[in-house]
Image (cartoon, rainbow, N blue to C red; front, side, top):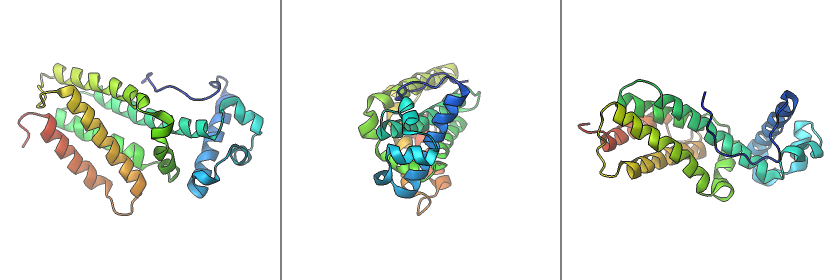
Length: 207
């Protein structure tokens, strides 16, 4: 079980099962409103009403609507990070690992509802670069350790920077899928081409 996660934005962390259920209900209500009304229709009074809780109960866990969006964004990041770290623990060949890392990242983003578009668009303002650095700093050393364990010398001269760039490419590709949401982009095609690109860039003797 992956323990590492990016930091929280709630007023207080729910400890009891009932409190956790309340938080989940609030977050689900926010996703419903975002998906139907967009960010312009989102406010704490409406979130509380749709969630069936009092505004006071909502404020026990979230300071404002921005902190609700912030938590939803962290859930997206945590889900992708956890899936990626699990893949890196598997004993599979490098090409298969890259393919699986691409697939789990794109899948974790592509499966989100229309609400995710507004959440991801708010990411630069709500998170800044430090939160994304937290994710990158967990992934890059693990990839490098995995390569050393398998005796693989990565092709780029600066593997740390190369992996940083690869993560950004995968992340942006996934966010593009969310924005497009099935209109023109095909997830399978993107995953295949992205896997081929990264294998050729990172791995030696990949034709």
